[in-house]
Image (tube, rainbow, N blue to C red; front, side, top):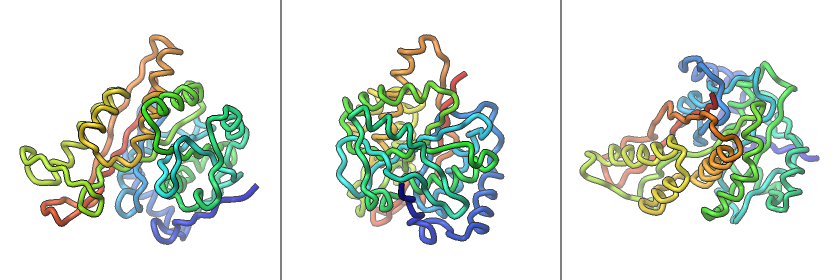
Length: 295
């Protein structure tokens, strides 16, 4: 089976292993140790100079001693996809070391009849999954060779589609040896993104953007799948990973039905914007880090 190249290295992040390692260590060192290991995180997928510091808050929550398989749910930016797709590769390359794909789980997902295979071109074009890989390699380096990944590209799903895939994936979230990385940036604001929602009651444009993002983040923290869907319909916030987030929230809903009385919580740990917009001709992208834990 083929290996996926690190196609965004040297542009979105450093292709030099020593330089990349130094940057990742620096960002992770600024984040405190978690009290409990995450079962899922939300992490941004922009170039590291924009979102690397925020992403560190997500990956610091993952304990390599507990985790054996990491699922990565990333939105499709380049190909039309009405469902979800898995990789045909056996490994994903990173400047640090190669990550092995759990081909057994990939095949199990294909066998459901609800997943398709990504083409190699679509796989290598997509940055939403690749941008999580160096951080996964770094945080899991003490378990190198003893863990696998399951990349899943998530298409433009309906709410019923999100519920369907949530139910299909819930059993994997129930397993404490698995961890999910939900890849998403938040509001893409500006004329180049065709999104210029502005509530002047919030102050400057960047303050309005943050208020809008935090409204969505509150619904995600509440693990409220229907509420998050309604929020998106009302405001149209350009959260590019809205469908992976929707699938995850539906995974939690399905898990609650399977494991009655389970205690779980989701908390946002960091929020940032690429630029503080004060002028309608400016633009920005928002980034957030969150952790999901089960007590």
